[in-house]
Each structure stands twice: as C-alpha cells, then as structure tokens.
Image (cartoon, rainbow, N blue to C red; front, side, top):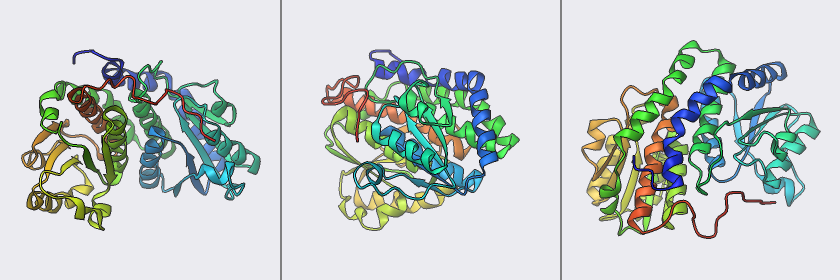
Length: 348
C-alpha cells in the first residue's frame, strides 16, 4: 500500500491497533466486564455521533446476539434541548467517542450517572470529559489520528466492543476468533491495496447506495459516511430489507450500488438482490469473500475467507475505507482534510 496520505497510513495501522488492544487493553476490558456483571443491567443505551454512531449500530447486533441485551441508541437532544431524558436507572449507558469531547454525548452519561446507571466510555482520550463522566473507561489505544475522517479509531471502537462482549459472555471460541482479527485485516488490506483503477469506473457517479445487513448494517453506514466525507458525494446506507421497502424504486440503469456481503446469515438475501440489481442494470461494487457475489459485480473488493460473521464488520470496513480513498483520488480530493470538517466536533 502506497502511503500517500494520513488517511491511507492510518488505515494500514489498524492491525497494529487491534494487537495493542489485545495486549494492553485486556485489563480495562475485564474491569468493565466485571462491573457490568455486578450491576446486571436490564438494557443498554449507547450515545455517539458520526462514525462512533455506526460503531453503536454494531454494538446493537453484537450485544444482542452474543449477550442477549436489548440495545437502544440515545437521542441526545432529549437531554440537551428538551430536558426529557428517559429512565436509565437499570441501564448500562455507553458513550463512544474518539475524542470524548462532545458535550451532548457527555450529557447522556452525566444524566445516566445521576440516575444510578452504570456508565462506560470507549474513547481514544482517557482524560477526556467523557471518560470523567464514566464509571468505567476502555481506552481505544489507537494513537493520534491525523486524518479528519476516522479510520483506525472507528475500527478500534468496534474491536473494543467485541472484546467487551466476549469478556461478558466468557465464550472461549469467540476469544480465539478475536485473536485472528489483526491478521484478517492485514490480508484484507493487502488484497485491496490498489483500488484506484476500479474506482475510476465509478468516478462519474454522484450518488451511491450502500447495502449491508445484520452485523454489517454498521459497515454500510460507515462506508457511506466515508464517501460523503472524502468525495462529497451522496451515499445512502440501507439494509437489504429496508431497500426493498421502497428505496429500491430509485435504482435504474448504471445506478452505483456498493454491496457489503461477507459470508453469514444475511447471505440468504443476496442472490435475489443481485438478480434485481442485474435486471435494473445497476453498477455494483461488491465487498465480499464469496465468488458467486464477486463474479456479478463490476468492482470486486475481496475479503479473506473463513472470517467469523460477527467479526466481519471490523475487517470489511477496511477495504471500504480504501474504496472511499480511491474514489476521493478519482475526484481529485484530499481525504485528510474534508472541506468544512474538523477532527473534533462539539455539538450540544
């Protein structure tokens, strides 16, 4: 991979971040898991914005599937504008933020703590206001992220969530699978080190639909966000089911679709969807490990084989980030400095 920007360099650092979390983050994860087991929450509320909100979507599937916890996404305006927070007395309230600075996210954890909830921060800055508002903190250990568009801090959030879920469940198979993730990401990035040529075939597109279901619903949202941030294009994320409930009407000839489809339970939807996209004449860029999916796409973004579905969002988004970077290059944009954006956004 040619290191021509902070954006690309930080994408390449992601396997090392996972290894750092495995080696140095275990104590904070185990401490948080112990506090959660003692508190025995009835449900989980996650507060986040931007990329971190997409990490929260992963948390909904992960904590639901592996820990049988109902997970809701916070509505910060209820706290900061309307003064009407929900009852969080028996909730685990998680704040996810790379900077830990945004006042509205901090306000959710402050109110949760006031009500007697257990509060947990996932942040790259363990001295941040978010961490100070939390009973427990899991530092992301991602190092400084210089590109404005988040890459390694996003996947660090996913990986920390996966470590926490596994610590809570005590599932030894999941623990073993976690250890494979750094190498899976290395392979995924190496297999897609040059996406500039296929991205040029989509350079005329001004709008995209990004599709991912189940665990990779989060991936669809994050890949769409990276395209918006770095190429200033319209990119709308959908699950397969939501797409078919109306938005599919907008897909016609040459409409660009990015399909995130690694092996897993959601594959049952994919053949029918590919038939529909072919009938409409759509252009498809597929992020998948499956030959039957990739063979029907105009751009083929290959994932490693034998990847556990629950970990696939951590790995699949890496090539998705590279695709966004290649699109930005095709449009002559600098992914390090998206116009009008700054690294820390403070919302109230």
